Amino acid sequence: LDHVTLEYFLHLLYVNCACNMGLLKFKGSKSFRLRLLLSTLSGKSIRIDDIRLNDTSPGLRDFEASFLRLMEKLTNGCVVEINETGTSLKYKPGVIVGGPGLFHDCGLSRSVGWFLEPLITLALFGKKPLSITLKGITNDHLDPSIDVIRTVTLPLLKRLGVEDNGLELKVFRRGARPMGGGEVMLKVPIMKQLPPVNLVDEGMVKRIRGVAYSMKVSPQSTNRMVDGARGLLNDYLADVYVFTDASSGASSGNSPGFGVTLVAETTSGCLLSAEACAKHDHARSARGASSAAFEESSMDAEHAGGGDGVLIVPEDVGSVASASLLQEIKRGGVVDGAHQGLLLLLAALGPQELAQVRLGPLTPHAVRTLRHVKDFLQVQFDLEPEEDSRTIFGTCVGAGLKNLARKTD
Image (cartoon, rainbow, N blue to C red):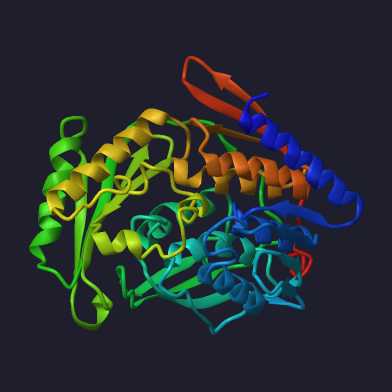
């Protein structure tokens, strides 16, 4: 057995032993948000041990503690127990409440997008529609930006049947690393039950849209990023338009920065995204967490905007984003790599009917999502690679999760 297979079998053995004791147990810091999210949705208590046990700075990071505080704000009755070193966590889920007028400071270690990803799914099963203001970093190279969530994630949910009325993300201020200063407001309606997922038609790319943004730098940077992006994309497609958003004053946050987000729309209505932003030496150190910080992001290397290198020339930012988008289109599938985990999760949470999805090569985050929905929801996907389209056709029968707090219409 190779190392990955052996690790998975040990994981199954550990989880099965924990199930016999009425408590799901996990090890390590990977999939921290996903475990808490599925624990809350399924109502199953969990225990996570050996959190960065061998790291130079063991235990939970500040952004993970911040996410626990956010879960406490959204639920009623949850219990969190952490040992003295922070390497062991026990979480007993409460009732999802939601509600209006909530506020949370996301800090400066991870961006707002890191908190929004699980928050959107959780809020759908709340007792009241959610309205929450989040403050922190809105655009960086590590997590999905607010532009991707606003132009791709929310439209994906609407396409899957989430009510259009009440699902909204407003951007009041942008914030770049290292000082942030951004502010957004998320509104999520509640649902009785998610509809079955049936997304198998990729379609052909018909147009590309995007937004080039800048904060506390020359507005000319946005035009230079547009030129860099169009210089590569116009060789393949004529219908390319990138909007510009040059923020200044109070709406530009506390740090200078710039970047571009690109979205390709296909003839079947699928949206594929890629993005890149300026990265300096301080941006790498500002991850603050550890070498394990990147593993907790749902974004793969292409979405991270060019890996770990320094990226400060606007034209290079635009060309890197374009190359990443072309790579996503080449991968295939009805969603990009950053949204594979979300799509699989929504399919698993749906009614006890057949759900069908078509994906490109699975990202590590998507693989971990498949394992965890099996642990928590007992939902197993049947994956069949298709050589002709070089995609993966996945089917499952949903867990039939219902929001008992919402009355039937």
